[in-house]
Image 1 (cartoon, rainbow, N blue to C red):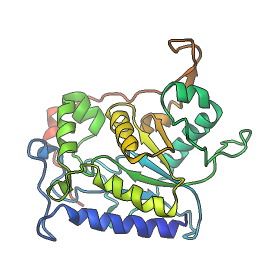
Image 2 (image 1 turned 45 degrees about the vertical axis):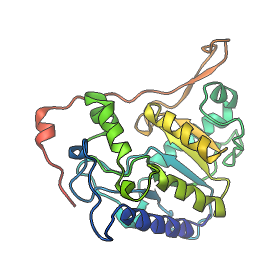
Image 3 (image 1 turned 60 degrees about the horizontal axis):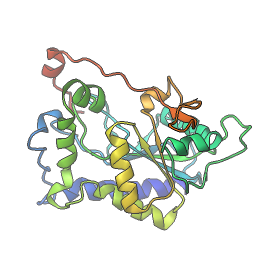
Amino acid sequence: MKHSDLVDLLKGLERAWNTYGSVTPGSTPPLPPLAGAWVRPSNNIQYFACSDDRGNPDLDLPVVVDVGINYTQAKEWVPGYDIVDKDLNNIDAEKRCIAHCNQERDAWEKTCLCSTALTNPLLLNLSANPPVREFHLVATNFSPWITTHSWWSVIAGSFSPAIAADLLAHPPHSLRSKDPFGHLTALHEKLQKVDASAVWIGHGLEAVAAHFRLWTGRMNIQNWMITGNLAMLHLTPPTVRPGAGPNGEDLVKFGKPRKQGITKMDLLEKPVDE
């Protein structure tokens, strides 16, 4: 798919879903009733972003959709309708995972980290380094809320997963749609018409994996994978644990993100609205 076409597709979806939650067009969707304090007071919604075009808007590449990326948190910049994220580190991390899956396919399947029907559309010569084609990366998440602190290490890790659950249960579009992941469904329907071979990757092995498998099953998505937390993939790529399965199968292991502590001052400090 050409990068320019992908950007147009995502911009259209972003505009539609960023206003979809308001009963009155232009009004601000209500914050989650219980966990609203964990959401930035403004500039707090982002549904989609994608990788840079590397200087060529006509660049025609396969599409990988990463479900579970936090584009930004706390005081960091919000991509907004510009959509494009120039940070290519996530692509490099996912390349390593896709390459490892291509090379250790049986272990990935035994660890339930990829579909048995995955067609390896990104496969190149396994002797190449890395043995993966270039691709456009679409970043999205189960929740479009931009939070005041990290989802995993602070909100769910230092406090309670129930806070993250409330954020998921009350997306900005909750007034108009009963499907909390309706934006993902809309993206899937659009991509099916232009690139049915897109690979969907659930990023994160905690709650993301369960939500991802349930949603991809409902959508009948065959090209799916699950990887570890991208922040950890830069430090600890996936490895094979020989004979670790219940019947002596080789399994795949990912490093886990560290849970970070949080101080009272961290909570008192309000994020800056860009």
